[in-house]
Image (cartoon, rainbow, N blue to C red):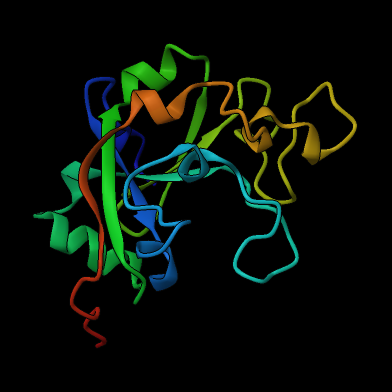
Amino acid sequence: MSEDDQPAGTEKVVRGLLRFPRELTGPYARLHQDIDDFIRRLEYRDTGLPENGISVFRMSKFASAADFYAKLKTKKPVGYAQCELSSLNALGLKHKVSGQNNEHVSLRCPDCNMIELAEGICKPTDKASFADCPLFDKSDPFELNKKFKEQEAPVARPAPQTS
């Protein structure tokens, strides 16, 4: 990654709001952004491993919301929320940029040991386990649900194009 392609504090970052189709109807519908959209998952994509951070993306790297959705490569209903990176930095959150075009930003807790390390499961430096990371806390201690503003609610979108 090029050091000169780090996101600016005023840059907008976006979080995909993914839903299972069953979450769009019925008594337990999740029609809009909620706290669960901003919690680090204990099991990531059926790998048996925890998520290393909370994934957000640099909106400046996409020509449109449709291009962002295509990047997510999901058939699930999806929407997105955004905020300025500076408001996340003000919370003490760290971030790690990756991706072919430096489009992916992994948010990490203020005490994360992975900003410098290349492999392994991240955890707070002064804690015994990765599970001690506050990003697993179901109460959203950094109030990311309030920082991010929903731009498009989750709905079924056209299937992503495969190449």
